[in-house]
Length: 149
Image 1 (tube, rainbow, N blue to C red):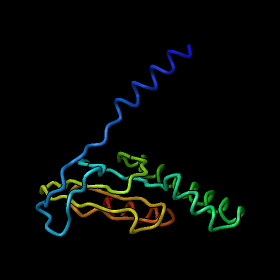
Image 2 (spheres, one colour):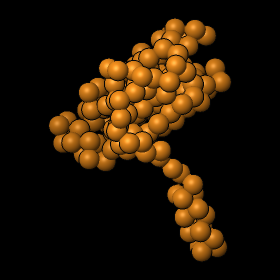
Image 3 (cartoon, rainbow, N blue to C red):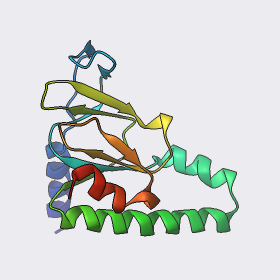
């Protein structure tokens, strides 16, 4: 049974791919595609979260009570937003990558560096408009506004 679980884990990891693109200028002249970025080319919402190093840094800047409260609040807001997005039939991704590249219908590519924003956030993308970044506590009203639903 243990060997079966290991094999399933290996197969699962093998099937999870991140599309790498060479660095190049796109039709959207104000942005570039970045090597190692997660590339998304469908209507979706991306919930980005801190990686372990960022989490440790946050935890060291706060008291344990403050950190636990922050984490609890973020979880609550993210759960509410995720449930709302799923109820609208929009695909959801949860990632902790630094760069996200979004392919628009007009062939333009918009790349977002999460380091320029808060540690937790939601990126909304409809393939026509530029992606929009929300803080978890701004949903679900802004989600409906962005997706016109």
